[in-house]
Length: 176
Length: 463
Image (tube, rainbow over all chains, first blue to last red; front, side, top):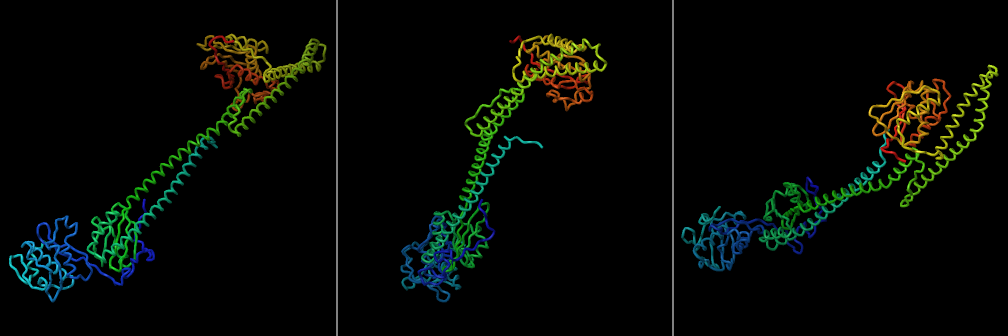
């Protein structure tokens, strides 16, 4: 009934509206923006850390990606039982890589959280920071979490606490 | 060459014409509407995909993490699947979207910076895929539209137009039947009337149809023609009757004189006797001719009274055969009656019936060595009087013509006989028809000619 074509037909650029084919976004002076799908870690229904993804501008900014963890899972992820251990009112003051270490400065402490949730929250931050580092070509060894610039101990799954936590410490919490 | 029926030709022309026109109309309508519907659908889809691509761009720019939600919202609103790719990697897609719907050729072309469109078949479903590159965010947006509704609409359209064409063809054919009937019926009536007139029913006329001018003209012209023809026949008959009548008196005088002369034949020389014999013979033929002409003209003009009476067929045939034999001084042929015939009654004019038998026997005497037998039988409720002669029969090609006026067959020429009037058998046919019967000539069992007279048998005496 409807005739089909064996190959795609090119539409003349003059027929494409809204400046879609333009190099910049109309109304801005911004150059080209590239986006990537950045892995982040959220908590699945079994209490393990599970990798999901967020579309973020490329190259990814660590603080921006970590803020996605505070925003929490999407509607669909929530429907699947996914949650975030990080409290909604948590503020990330800054986050960066220096050498092979990631530094995350929080606006408030995570110590008030139940121990299990606190471990998962730190795990989300550490594993997500590791993958952002990988996207940027940096293989980090661990993360140091501060609160308003003050160093403090972070919980480790094996029950210990440490100022510098490694990615290996939290790998066992991941289901991948 | 075999001629086809006018009715059939008209019917086929109307039916075929209606079918061709309706099919052509339906086809053109379908092609036109299909083209329009597809073009409209594709244009709408294209515009929608441009809008959605712009939404994708602004979402990526403002809140990229909302992209997946946006794509799912688009699917909910429009039922079209949107897929977003960046640097040959799928960035996001609607939950129900399949990357298989977007072909590599499309990905490649859009990746090269060209917007594309393509209608293709995917697993038995026709889809319309639009690809739009968005260089400002280094992504390519592909939107997949299902064309199932369009296909369903086109199928419905084809069905409706097909049924419409069928209905129009049937209506056309019905119209053809109506028109054909209306057109051909007057011709059939004319044909039927002409056949009746040819059979002697000269009072036959067509009923004037005032509904159609052309038909009215035809029937009026036909009736006028028949009236003129009848008038001409009557005039000719009257003329022949008058001439015959006028010739009768001098002929009688001549005959009487010839009789007187014959009484004094011995007083004449041999040359005078020979001349007298020739004169008497020719006078006899002349008298017969005048009598036949007179009778025929009276019959044609309807002046001769037809006195029908119910009589015993067997008795009448016997009487007629005897009368014919006496009249012509010939040996009386045997009358053979088939078993089971009984005593059938026929409604005839006795005088004319005798004339019929007399003429047939006289014809056999003149051209075929006499009548061998007169056989009476019953065929399908009709009395059959078969006069079989002892001659060699009538050639097949002459059998219909022997009843025409002044027809002389090969037998008459071969035998050198020129003594007949040529009206005897024509009179026979006229009389038999007046009785509601028929006369035909065929071959007798002995090989001679058989003149068969068929007359309807009446059950009881009728006035």
